[in-house]
Image 1 (cartoon, rainbow, N blue to C red):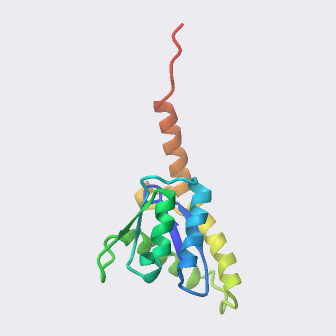
Image 2: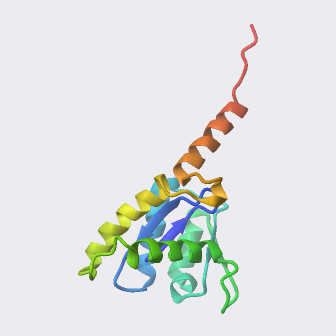
Image 3: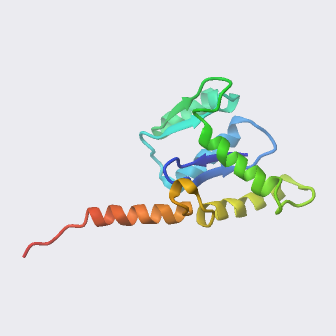
Length: 157
């Protein structure tokens, strides 16, 4: 499993379930995030651990193509990657090992379909303390509305 999480809103913007831990899994999640957030992501900082998927040449090249830069924490700690570890923990507790779990997961496709539902719930209904107990979608909508209100122009007759 690989999740791409917007650190500001806690929205999962890209994800991928696979039966392997190869770089292609991460690249697929990045493509989903690009579809969600835009093709050019200049200034984006991608925090990750030091796994081989995130230190590969292909990963670094793909980030450079979209204007993003990697940020890899030191080996053996999760300080730079705390958000990802938190989301992974929620996912495992709420879906993989949680009450919604099918006994047992039969195929990767079963996990992928369940993950699709969990990501939708996470983004639209799960309350996040960091977001003043709002779901990420609601938080983003409120932020966007505030930005629009701040930039409204007043016509002078």
